[in-house]
Image (cartoon, rainbow, N blue to C red; front, side, top):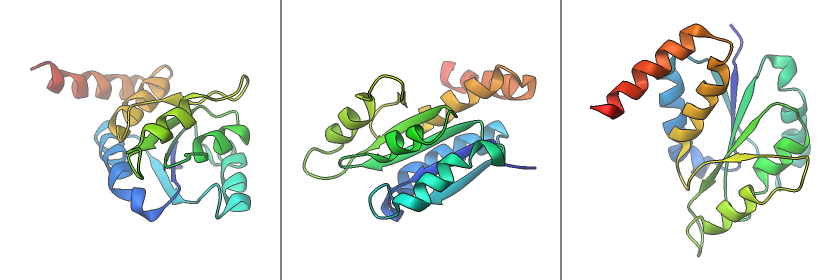
Length: 150
């Protein structure tokens, strides 16, 4: 079975934050692939990964990045697959710069954005998007949300 969610991060140091999204996707039974590819250090590889995502069966992308956080926007510029940005706390501004970079996208290149380091919500949002056409994911989401209502 091919992955339905692509997770991309700009640096191996982002892995700890992004692993929380992986855990939620696993709990929801959503297949995923993960790659480390920087918008600045690996621009060609990043563009290729993003532009080929739909052809690999990816239906939603979660992109995590810190500092200037160009990665989610670069990914969104190379695909029509919905992109969810995760600003990662780093540097002197502890993620606020990342949040502003991701949320302030130009018209025509949207990136949905969750809170700083909140890759769990990115995974839930990806699940909600997929659940529009998948009853199993919808049921898994309802079960997942029940644990937060207790």
